[in-house]
Length: 157
View 1 (cartoon, helix red, strand yellow):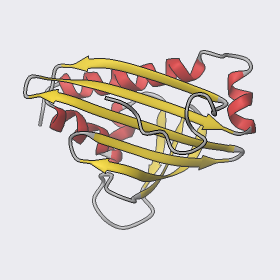
View 2 (tube, rainbow, N blue to C red):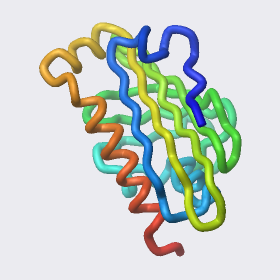
View 3 (cartoon, rainbow, N blue to C red):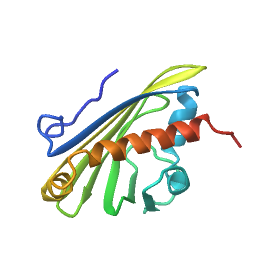
């Protein structure tokens, strides 16, 4: 289980990066479904606001889908770059003076999943975020992963 970092976004090349791995007591299809349900992110993930889907369609991520969101005050325009139902989801994002890459890799079976999440960013804004608090990106990714765990393990409608 590994992240396929695009050129320039491996941890060695990024200005800031984070990695998180956790076990979720839900099938990979459930975990993926919650993660791909971008129209529900504001209610599932703390720190996520103003999710917008500029194109018509369902409120879920799909291959090459563009979307905008704000995370902890950082506004990003993103596009899905990797999409394998139940297994992999990744997107690249652009903001003011920042380029980002966010990936999720899911494995497991009916009873549970192992999730690997990765985040990398480059640019002046990434450096400005890192300088006062070198662990901020890691805490943000860990929080997002914990929120995903709570959603996937919670009651289903």
